[in-house]
Length: 297
Image (cartoon, rainbow, N blue to C red; front, top):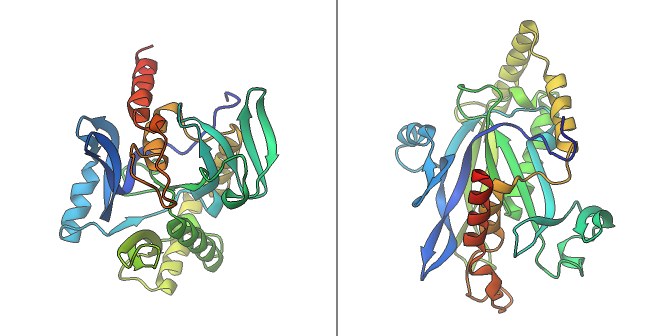
């Protein structure tokens, strides 16, 4: 295994609740009120839809607001990885990733271990650090070990998913990977959203099942897997070693999508009235060119 390379679950597609649009020559993130499943391929119009998107959308009657899923791992922390992350505006590379206690920071002298006070108390990040999480889930039965990844910087989504994973792990006796679940889009209004609806992702028992029925199914699936020789504990341990093998999870080709979420190409004032610096205007284009050059090298 190559040291320094984080080994992540194989990804066959993406799950998003928004898209990036062009407005006045700038690329801006636009939130949506439904899920979208895409492949990992982009064209000039954006991400190409995954075939499952059409299938699930037909079953849902148009708006895709819930997705039946299973998890890859029993350990909640392997399914959802959440950090406080700071990205370099000029390169899109992660600069500092922490958990509220300690962080890994890249500087001129290489990687260092630092204290992490969190975004609100960090003088190094100066307000540019955000909570950033990745959730891997199985959608469909085509690939038992392949997954769709949901990337998010939403505190509502991160907090809700973290709680649900811990709770389902507890009530199922640790059989989280065997639970029949679904991602569900929920809306809420707050004073900070000026009473307009904001959407976040929840994880619930699959529609038509009670919690008790879902646990009973999980026990049956777990026993069936064990009878077939499926070693879930070994799979969790392999994933744990893979995540620990590198400092940062995202690869170079993932950087443009991540930066669009963190630093949209906009000159509109932010929440504090401060306009973003001009170096974000062409950041997406620069990163796309870098990735393209790397792909042809």
